[in-house]
Length: 252
Image 1 (spheres, rainbow, N blue to C red):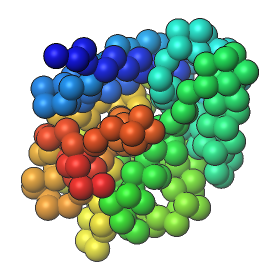
Image 2: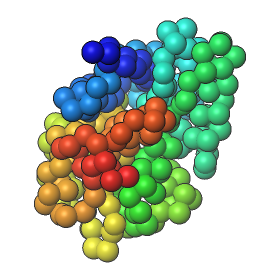
Image 3: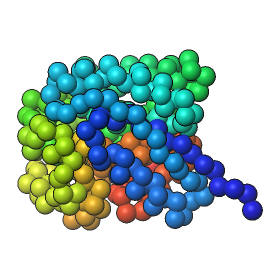
Image 4: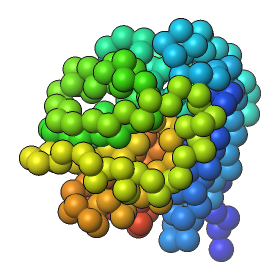
């Protein structure tokens, strides 16, 4: 019997993030129940306490260092786990960031594909054919506006949004993962193709994804679900992980 393939998953996370290191492993651990691959998880942190444009820009400057550190561990895939940091740096910036960080790993002799949560959310929505969406975000309204502009620049219309206006990133991470199932009931979903239950890597939502999808009959994704999906795609692995919504159904 051959040994299971061991995959090292690296994540660049804000120093105050407590969610991506729980949600992505939870999805991939669930995948291990039906697939042979096994995963280990490794992180490097960028300083950020409050979700403001200024702190996000300062934090992004640290991402190269983090990519270098993670490439020392020879990770197989690298995730940049801060959606709004990328989106606040300018339209289409996820492509610039992913290319730059990949070059950092390659220059260190350990080239690894790079997935940004910002790019993953856009790519995940395109994968399910979503042209119109509604979304929930924890950000202050000006940052949510930046996120909406970024997504719409990628050819996806945002019909409605809810901003929880929580600036403290630790407080965002303390939200109930089942709360989005209730909060999204206030979204206008008339005519939309999909719902984003959490347009933020720090706001927990994993327990709400399938609940919302079952209630509405619409595909439901989140930043962590989309990031996991794109990591699996980059690794050339099957994307079927039951219980986490349509994007991880294996159809895409």
